[in-house]
Image (tube, rainbow, N blue to C red; front, side):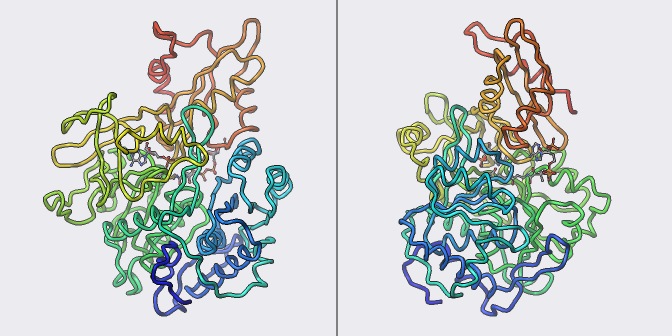
Length: 528
Ligand code: MCA
Ligand code: AMP
């Protein structure tokens, strides 16, 4: 493949990092039936070229969105790479989304192409065609489906479409505290700059490791969010590193992969579940170089227990869909911060090189070191805005151009950032974001419901889970279990509150606002 010198298409940078010997293994995985499967670097190149050629043959308008709701597979990753290569915009969707949620995303994004699982073709294609989508393909987790059937007839070389750094590469939907989800628009430049920074900051190496070829990543996260799709995949590809690819998180499979790997990235729930494995010890992790956590707060108990059991200190970092990664604890000595190299539990480390981070009060005035306030950021990975929502975009930036994260935190005298809360009403459950406003709205639409409140409470496995408190209309009778069952038919399963209480009233302050802090306090002991 010819490398155009000034093409800012992210795929060019990833492809340029493939090792010279394309016959080396790039991905090691198993089929759904458990048979071992190996993909070489050449396989990644050729298979993504075939899909890119298929997309190109459709003659889609520039900037077309390719919406994808499929189970995790290597081919799903290849579809992402092919979309970059073909110059279109990748739009990944959680497989847990139900038809009402999909209807919104597809209606809002108006994708030219939708790719779904063979089993969902019936209902997903109906939604897609209604929204004007011309092409609906299927992709199974076992290398089946019309996408690969059609791509098989295409050539296996493809020249990446010319892109500028500011061109859109992906849209990631992220819920809002009010109203519906917003599509965060990320550019080729956003994604590449962050990937390069993380590769350097986390010390990715192309030598050493279990087979002498450098780092090997255990990839066990879903690939429809920033963590699994961008942070993990980009770092590995940009380092020419092999991935041990698990279709789903399974603590035993992760432990079994550790002797052949060096890097693991996970949300805190995965660390909690790994700690429950008696086989997790210093010996099992002795070949590992780095454990990285993020997407939700890592409890200090988990941080300490991990160090005690394995001898490794988890490196916690912090980011958002709108910004990709913003801060990280140091991997080695950080010269910008006096050579400090300590990974401090309970903190998310330093702003990454190139990231500006400030803590301000509600009026937007910068606060002194150590004071708690709203976190605002700037930098090359900060997104381009919300898809077709210029007003919302404007609201989320300060007058002088800083993005308002909605997270509340502080910076200590040594420069470490801590997240102490959120100004946005958000529950992070097992690394997935759940917006109470969306759940409350679904509950309030039920005929016998007068009002409701959903709050997050501590949970030993998911960190935090939702609990609903519901008030019936006068004379109506409600039952918590029935409400939850009804919600299950409407919303992605991880959004369903783990408990639902029927009460006679919600606590309110003198302004009439529901006092969620009192509900949180009342229910905080439910699961711990
Ligand atoms: C599954 N369930 C959950 C969750 N996941 N409930 C609350 N929160 C969750 N996260 C429920 C299901 O509804 C189901 O309930 C039951 O648990 C079993 O479902 P199953 O799918 O079997 O669960 P699992 O396979 O054990 O999944 C748990 C998980 C998964 C592996 C922790 O949630 C996961 O992969 N989380 C990672 C999310 C992630 O990648 N986040 C990154 C976002 P029932 O039986 O009642 O139906 S990116 C991001 O946040 C930013 C940018 C960042 O900084 O990285
Ligand atoms: P999302 O928009 O789904 O990507 O979620 C981003 C949010 O996850 C951030 O705004 C934070 O609230 C939260 N988050 C990510 N990483 C961390 C972390 N290490 N500690 C605390 N919160 C985090």
